Every structure is written in structure tokens, then in C-alpha cells.
Length: 284
Image (cartoon, rainbow, N blue to C red; front, side):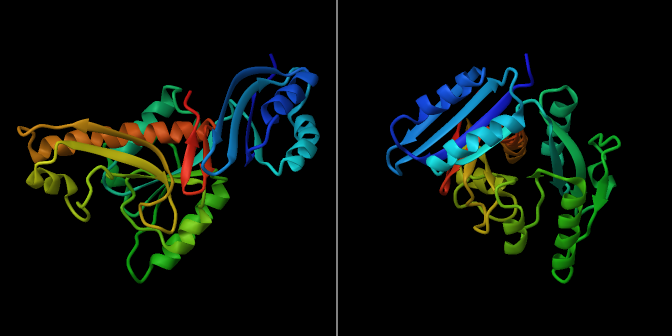
């Protein structure tokens, strides 16, 4: 079998798109391994993701021959190698549980990524519990006066390392509008968004004081609207009256880690398509 490819596309919904795409692949000797589609009737948009074995055809040949069909339907589309690890830059502050989880999943072969850089506003010793190995580590301190220059350093690392995705693994700094725009569509953040009204410091302690019965987290793309980017994945967990603030923090760390990991996996596997301020997520 040839190296599998993934075709993702979105366009205005019209009759026959699925048939045209399937016939195109069949006529070139392709074998569909997995296919999912979604017709959004509210926005009149069509979304599709197809994994396939290209047979004797090459990726370049399929891309060139598919272009006229894509133009006919005004598609926003992408053709990617399914199994190629994507180059990822990870950003972290002092809380390293999400970073440690991502690196563990990568090391056991569960996360299809290649960590090319770790960036932190704290020195390496601040995350001493996490085994970083030989992944390049960059310590860029930040203050109100140095924010612009620090963000410029981050962009330089991203460009020089060829990072295709940036993951804010509990990076506790607000990106400027310029930085958010620079990483648009390729920067994922984790946020405790199942704690409505509990902004600022110690959200889990605030939740404890209010007696909430559920905590959770959301992973979303970063936009210029703080913590309001398109959501990729969410999860929640029930809590009880006997749970202390420390218990909430412990459970919160676990939720944040698994929600972020799933969102990153979905993105790396080309399973997330933007639909305005929302996302279409083809689970697999």
C-alpha cells in the first residue's frame, strides 16, 4: 500500500460533491480508507474529510489533477500525508502537567507530532518535573515593557524551527493581537471554561467557594478574542460537596491534560475544519 493521504475540503453545499470526489479518487486507482462529511444546513456549507490509499498516483499528481474540480466548487481544500508527524512548538509557564502529558504521549507513539521547540517565560528549572530530553528549550522572560520584543523572539523560533502548530500548554501569558493573528489557525490553547464567572487567579478555589457541581476545560484555537476562539474539544467532570480546593485542582489538571491532548491529536490528524467561529470535528 502506498503512503495514505488525507483530503479535507469545505465549500458551499451543492448536490453531487461526494460523488464527484469519490469518482475522482476511484478513477485514479485510489482506495478510500475512511470518509466523513457534514452538511451544515444553517450556513449552507459542506465539509468533508477522506483518508485514502493513492495507489500508483503520487501526491503531487493528485493535487494538480484535483485543482480544477476544487476550483469548480470554490473549495477551501488541503491534501496532506496522513502519517507524517507535524512539527510542533510547545509553550509553557510554571504549570507543566499538560506539557508532560503531551510529551509522554509523543514518546509512546500516541501523538503524531515532532516537538521542535519548547518556549517558556520561566527558566528550564521551573518545569524540572518534566523530562524535556534534547528538545530545544528557549527561555524568553516577559514583562510589560518587553512583551513586543519577546513575542518577536517567539515568532523567530517558530519560523526557524518550521513549526506547523503552536500549543499553549498552560502558557500563562495573553498573546497580543499581532501574535494571535500571526499564529491564526495553528495555535491551540487550553482554558478552564466550564467555570463560568471564575476569571483571574485560583479559579478552582473560587469554584469551591461557590459550591459548583461540575468542572471542565475547553481547548480552542487562539484568536484576538481572548478565550473565545473556535472550540475543538471539551470535557467535564462532576464534583461533590466533599471535594476540597486541592481535589478540584487535581481533577482540573487531569481534565486539562486530556482535553488538550485530544484537541492536539484531532488537529494533527487533519480532523478539524473551521466553520466560521465554530469547528467541524471529524472524530476518529
